[in-house]
Image 1: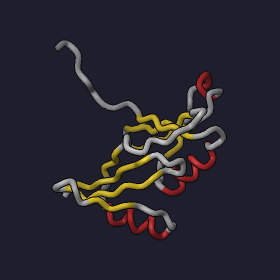
Image 2: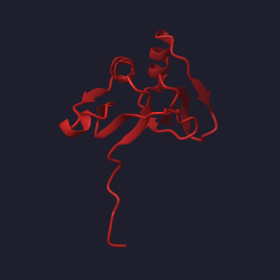
Image 3: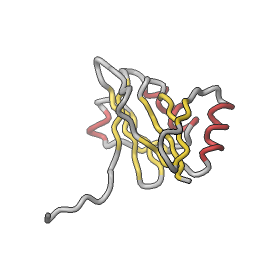
Image 4: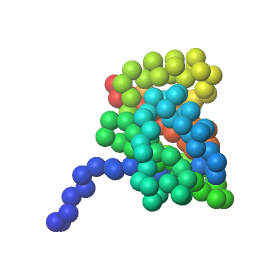
Amino acid sequence: MSFTFKAIDHIQLAAPKGSEEEARNFFTKLLGFKEVEKPENLKKRGGVWFGFANYQIHIGIENPFSPAKKAHPAFEVENIHLLKEHLSNNNVDYIEDENLPGAERFYMDDPFGNRLEFLEWK
């Protein structure tokens, strides 16, 4: 083949109309992502973008909205036990899962019901 995949540019998650502030609180204040400025011509669509390392999460407005219950992004974490402690201290529920050999992982929902996975390879 003459083409090559280089990376995932971003992950898009859906959220209901008017949920930008709730997304900011969750992704920046709780998870520590940085907000990324959207291009001017896309701002009128609503939503908000976030980034960490070389990755971006785009929260797009969907009407009618339906959360992703099975499909999900998976975030590789260093010191996952500290993330779980941080979430517990902030009264955020998560579900631990031991079904992936060689990984410690858990699932949680974003404020809109989208499934998120967090894992650390042992």
